[in-house]
Length: 381
Image 1: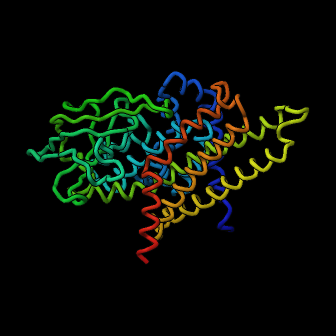
Image 2: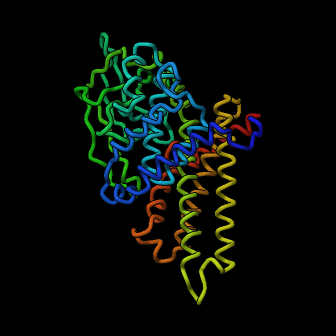
Image 3: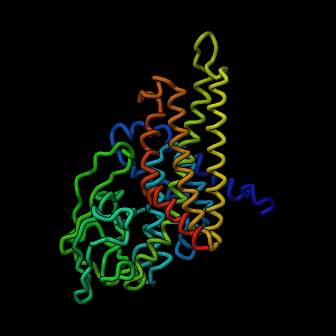
């Protein structure tokens, strides 16, 4: 890289490709998806034609084998149109990566070809009704019975639950809090697998969320990813990338609302002049732009660290996720204020981003947990 603070030509090309796809296939339809609670499976599947079904799946497994910065650029670009759809694609990518990175040849051969093309779409199931931030407190059990595991328990807040084809699940195979957790791939049509009613949410309406329920569901041992008891390590490894992606989704949504606010305040007249001519408006826009660039710079740096497997990658991912999601929501909130009463109407996109971005400071680890991770890491030195 000629200059470490500039994107490479390849990265710019990937960004442009994702932006063009978004402008064509996502942005014009996102308001309708939100209003009708429509899950745009066809559009999500189309993104796989660009390689977005397997962004950091290795090339030997059929993926495009990119780094975490490239993935963040793609998520940021797609969130400019619809953060919920972008985040949904991110989750599929995390599940596919987990199988590719930690799975044996059999489980990879069975699932990866169709995941890469998004012929099958994957969900990721870690959270339970009683274990959110305390992820290792999960209670869903998998009891070995011959060449199958028998699963019992409930997963909560699962994106794609009931619509997606496979579920990469963290389940309990032993008593030890972390070393008793194992990763299994579960097919949608497995007997004993059912789904709760779709959750009624504040935002993310284009992305279905529901409980995933196991009642004596039999899953073949060959569907295990890695060894028994290794699942929690995989879950933690996946979170660095997931945090970068959700932060990137906040950057994309915030950029969209900043752009919309600049355009709107130049057109909107009050007191005989454009609202943009008032110094207060200019100061608000300046702070929004500054906070966005600061968060973006930290997120891109964290992404480079995760790709390079730097020793401080998890601390930087946590810092970047916290800053990008907090700043993103504040920027969108300020954009809504600049739109005045019109910002509160569904005729304009701001309120949708305001609702969609709110959950980003909760999922992939709450922003309170992010501070915990950073604080602990600082005191460990």
